[in-house]
Image (cartoon, rainbow, N blue to C red; front, side):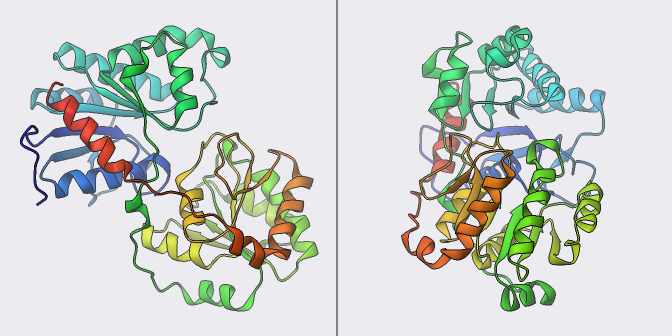
Length: 365
């Protein structure tokens, strides 16, 4: 067990969030936060409100319905747990769940923490995108003792709701712990793709509109015609992929695509390290931890421009299929020089920074 600072007693924290599996986004961030807090002797529990909440045998508390959710939030508060709610500006359901958990926390005399994930422009954020939700945001942001967000741009937008800047903490989701992994053996078919085809590129996707997969399919169809030895490896849970698979089949390249499914972190980084480059299609994902992981592995990244991409990313105009194809061709034809010149991003220990903030809130400071 890690040494505890004398000014902190072990914390009791309930994260309310989506949680692996499937492995993605802020769920992985909470996975690492929990792992570090558990190792330090804190009591860290996760109330899973994500897609995997009905799975059994995992290290989270499932949510079985609305009344079950409220009952469990209240039960944890009565046991002295600090509520740490994770949300973004894309989900009306998320606002309701956050409103409920924050209200329960306030009624039991403890101000919660919230983490507001993703970039500075989301479906219902900032104010000019959803002015009717201004009072909802004001309540959520004012109710929280501390607010964690991704970067200074998001902080500035949160402050536009009249929130004091000193309670808002921009903490990058990516942390040095993300890069601690053991390379894993891969399925023989996947190993054969990396050995026998070029370029073998990787794309992580959830089959939702914000990943712009229809445009990606059109772009890869053109790219594959020009580079017929190319292969596309799709990572992530395959739920909802039928429409995309049908489009790939109609365009004649489904046999050039390998659906790897939801991988654990070691497998994900192993695949990323072997890829020619990583194709990242979402617009509202901010910097993206997987982009930073790829750059840290010296795997080039082709991603849509969203105003938050780190140095070294090859950027295309979002929804511009011609530009996407052009940047994929550029990455293919100049790969060795791109890898040679690729800057490795700084990797701070942001997990410890966030956990210190959580313990500070738990101790009432």
